[in-house]
Length: 619
Image (cartoon, rainbow, N blue to C red; front, top):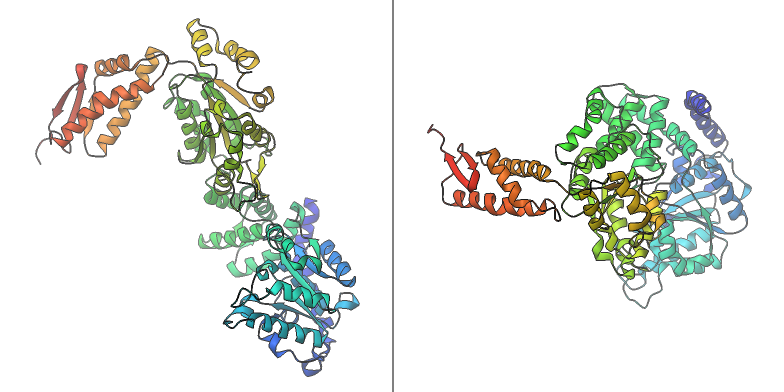
């Protein structure tokens, strides 16, 4: 398939030129000027003021070619030859408008069935139709006059884009029938043909509830597959190359389709691939480069999404190989947890993971205050570039069965849920399910599909992609058992095996646990580890003082004293945070308010909470 596409692309400009010449040469045989067969019917001045003649644009060679849509065009011919008007249903960006443009090109070249020959394809503009209408019934009157001219001429096919917009539209006065009823009545009582477009969502919300459903036959316009999308991009690349004076390799076109499909979720193929094509041409031209390769496309998508997609550099290799040490700079103890996370991030960065599932699904088990949430923040910062790249859900808020509506959206509502909308808006993030054991079992069932298939459908029927998220669930289930066994020096692997086989059965179903790529057991922090955590917390205090131009020095004895006061094997590091807040933060705040500490001063914290200020020399 790749060789075929390369050969096609080599000859594509010649094919485009040949097609263009063929359309123009066939159009030559159609009479010009006042005796054009398409214009020998009655004049349509009123229609012309509210519309655009698409066939005229095709005659002038101003429409792009339609590629890889032969099946849909043939279906359109079949339905309209059966005496029906056609409604093209497809998501925004799949090419409904381009299909109409392709029909206009074929009509000009007379490469169409007899029904379409010597016809005009005219696009009716709803904004033009309703602009300035203020009198009661004025919009309906305008539409009736337009349709009267179309019916009288007998050689016009009307195109109405986003036909759902006419549902409920009328001029002043609620007693008037809307435009959809006017149009449907005219189509039922005449032989006029209309080609309209809409999206599946608007089809369901507006069109199916209106009178239009009885007069239109639906033709589905699906998103093109990968090979079709590459061909469509090939058909558009020549114009971009000419505009920006650059050249695309075939590899770059493949990357445009693949990366836009995988990482740009707010649009559909082929529109998002074409938009990326144009953006790449502009971006590379500004860098004074001429040849665009696949790595350039990966770099551009990385800039747009903040996801590392380019080849792993030597610097990144060093970071990935030393990621354990980097994480241990923030996470004290918990060697097994860090090891599993590092392995998952390495697989993701080198693209050795399953692309149809989330980057990794992890369950963190352990007592409170041992670093479960801190490790999640570290993962977000390491992979997504910021701790803020996190979607955090407190699962204790979802203990009722009907709280599913909060996650997915209320049935019949017009907005999505807290989870689905958050992931749609930020598809590259860490999703943290905090205290997951407190959620209702039906809530947990939702995440079975997320962890297995990497997708979830909200109540509006939109499929949300989870393949670019890291899913982390934290739980305190089994904490007492973990603390007891760690005190007996039981190996972590033995503890984890017992938790999975027996202790967690009351909190989680087996199929839920089996969906996780890794279940990590966090052990309680020892006195020495609490001492190291105290060092990290005091560094954070020192950094805040450094922002004010003040340096902080903490003696080892003072650090040991704080760690001893904050040590609690049950509650982890949280009591230590309160101790530092009360003994260090509060004391420093008082010194600052009393003016005892100024810029460039050095503050020394010693045993017993004694604070000594070394004043800076006067400048």
